[in-house]
Length: 290
Ligand SMILES: [Zn+2]
Image (tube, rainbow, N blue to C red; front, side, top):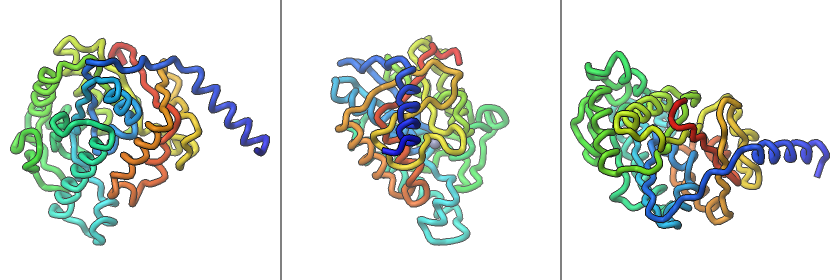
């Protein structure tokens, strides 16, 4: 091994070791994951999910959007320079199918997955200017949930309606642990998911059960980009106390399989997606105060 590469690996390993350890899931525990888009649950948490299922915990996943606003992906998938509402709606349906396959790969039961079908790229506006007035999606042209397979078809694209749906699911699942994006995640939909999720958790007295994760943090994180399953996932920023969850080789293989279920995403973001298949996952559990 070249000395420089060895030094880099040693640095990465020591950075990971500096994190605390995420407590392992327990039998009977109820884990609820909020994912802004189909694929986030796998990128952040696939190892924790499969280990939870194996330990006898119950895992539920909520996707706030169906990923129907990703123009570059629609261009690739449908081989057209000008995708319209029909293509974006179809892309959303495809991504929900991929999410079902990824969840099944990780052992999550079909009854425990929830697709809210809210607009990809529009969640942050639901938190303020469209809290009461429905947003019209710039890609699907819907102003209410249009997917028949969603949790509540026809629910308006308002922040208030989204908050009510999340509240209903939180009360139904009664989570012991809620995994959602940290405020520092740089994607606006992720930030909005953090805000909505923590707001609902606080309203139900569950703030102390919230832990956060990050998927978007700078241009080249996770670094190095690409499939390096023997490398640690390094901390995306120093503002949090990170807890590391170690993946077994079996869980790494399951994570890679779940990532690969996202065929439409692998077309455009293969290196980025595979960058999350590392020997650990990182969470911050500071009681929801962040
Ligand atoms: Zn996302």
